[in-house]
Every structure is written in C-alpha cells, then in structure tokens.
Length: 250
Image (cartoon, rainbow, N blue to C red; front, side, top):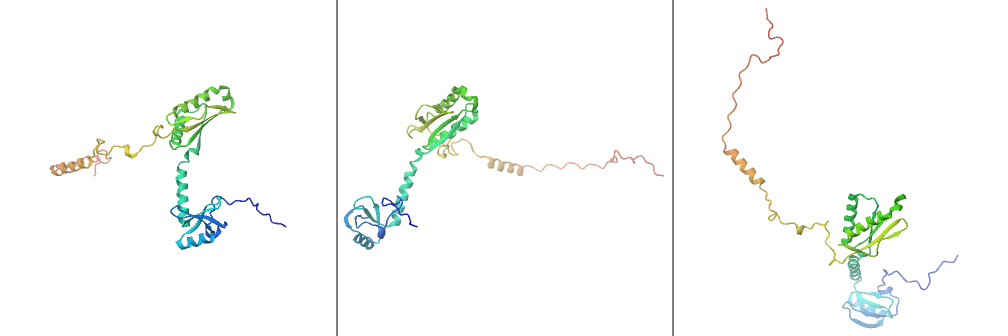
C-alpha cells in the first residue's frame, strides 16, 4: 500500500520559524540584532557567526531570495512577536460584532437594557448589529418594527452611525452600527470613574458621629446619679383574686 506524499508546493504554517540548522537555504542574508545588514553569506558561516556571538540564527523572511535571517536570541525574538501580537489585538475590537435583538412590542424596561448594552459595546470600539424579528401576524404591521429600530438608532446617535439604512430581510429588519471615532464619540454615561467623584472634604458631609458620642459620654459622667425610687410597702391584698381570702379557720 503506497503512502500518500505531500505536494511540493506545501508550505509550513506561518507560526513555524526555522532556527539555526533547520534553515534549508544555502545562502542567507544576515541582519544583526541592531538591524544592520551584514550581507549575503553561506549558511554555515552565518551559523558560526551566531554561535560566536552567543545568539541564534532566526529566519524572519523565508519568502525572500535569499532568505533573510536575524542574529538574535530565539527566546527574545518570540517575546517580541508575542508583544507585537498583543498590541495588535488591542486595536481589533472594531472587527467584533455584537448583536442586539428587538421585537415590535418590546417592553420599555427591556428597551432600556438593550440600549445600555449597545452603548457599552460601542464605547469599547465594537460594531453592533440590530436585529428585529417578526412572528406570526406581526408581519402585517411592519411599520411598528421599523419604529423600534429607528428609535434605538436615534438613541445611539452620539456613539455610532449606521452603515446603511435599516432593511427588511426575510422576516426581520437588520441594521449595522459602527462606532464613532473616540474624539467625536460621547462619553459612556454608564461608567463612573473614581476621578470624577469629589473628595470627602469637598462633599460637604462630615462624620461627627464619633465626636457626638464622646460628648454624650462626658455629659453622662458629669451628671449626678438619679435617686432610686422608694420601696413599696407590702400589701395585704397581694392576692386580690384569692379564693381562700374569706375562708374562716375554726
């Protein structure tokens, strides 16, 4: 049974990086750690140069002719790549799309919750897709659905703009909102920063509970003790309802 072989046009994944003896080219263009071009040299000479400097020969551009290699510690090179990818992911929120679903007869409280979620998504540089679905006989009154969608789009005007007018597709209405630039976007009203709160001295409220307690304790200590109530004399009619009170003993 013959074993299938990979085609010659196979290329390794982009995350694969050849280092030192795994490089297949006969000649490589070498760049030192200071981004200085050292020229084209045989692979063996480049590896010996890397060993002499105590670093690795890392292939950074395999598609070039000849391939470009860099004299750098491989662990440091991987750390730099990971750092660059992390910085790039910070600016990719605009590629994320969050969906907000509505209904023609949505409750006002639910509408306010949907509006808050959409505002938070837009302020985080995410796109928002508004979707409204009709059920059953609701298709006979599509104008109510468009009113709900336009109402939400109008409420989100300070934070985003629609890419296109709302359209009826099948049994639903769809519209995509893109966040405005941060310089033109309104501030998220649902986030409260501690820097905006006044310090305790400026709030005009002072805590005098401890001082008032100390003053009360001092007044109680200086006041004379209250006299005790007089003792009550024993009464013969202690048991007013005693059934044996009028009993005569012979």
